[in-house]
Amino acid sequence: MDLEFRYLRDFLAVVESGSLGDAARRLKTSQPTLTRSVKQLEQSVGGAVFDRMPQGMRPTALGRAL
Image (cartoon, rainbow, N blue to C red; front, side):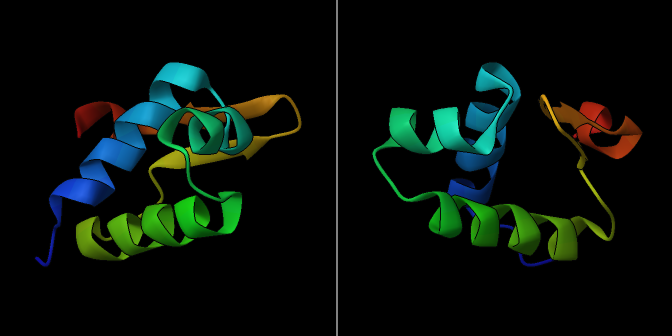
């Protein structure tokens, strides 16, 4: 598993803020950069860590376990 600290930092920011846009602003990065980080985390852990919904993002069972 190739898991980097920044993936976990970004994951936690999305969990706490509930959306990629808010998390990106909080981390002072772009939304596309944060999206790539979440995708890399999902590749590392072998599954989706968020349910993407119109009103934001919610952790999946795998995301909650993480």
